[in-house]
Length: 263
Image (cartoon, rainbow, N blue to C red; front, side):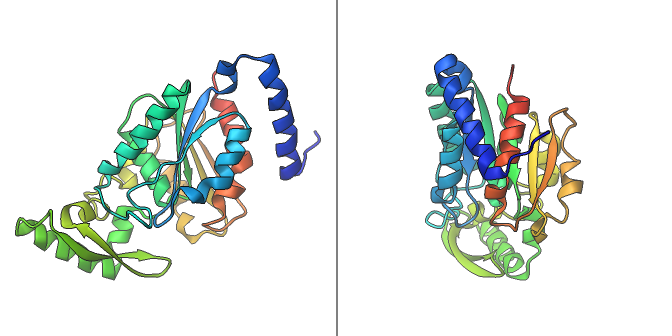
């Protein structure tokens, strides 16, 4: 079998898809709508290239700004952020998407898993180097100190007062402004984002992409195994670090979407 380099492979697929536009109805061409969830302190611009590439392949794509972006970080609770994803899903469905894929990178991957675990009607979940699990991060000293501070505020009925807490990004503390109640939803064993809770609750097939040079993915295999078994679950390893995983995952994403797409 002839195997094309990744760039040439994309060009070949794009040409085939372009021909399909003229040979098949739009419903067959734009079957899936994909919501891309950016990472912590990121933003929709993180996915400019991936969104463009997926759109070029015929998929409908929405990239909402989430409540963990650099501009908004923690202005809502973890599940409060689901409203932004719900809105993106509604747009895709209104545009004619016949199935919804929720995909996310880093904390966005954790968010994608949590969202899919708490919603019905999701066709698939793509977790790109999911990282920032609330339990593990809650044990980081600067965050543990802020959790204690937030819990004290809740005990004094000051859970809705905006204060400064510490998060941890790229190896150093990151001060954030949030209410104690909202801050606590992102960290600790009671967070709705805990992956050991969300993975077993998935109701859709899962593609997990882990970079071989990404230390955050050392437990990828054991966590992936917690998802309910389906014929389409895949754990794919790519030659990338944490930030490079979404780009390196493109071919794996296309292959998986083609596999789960109704024939």
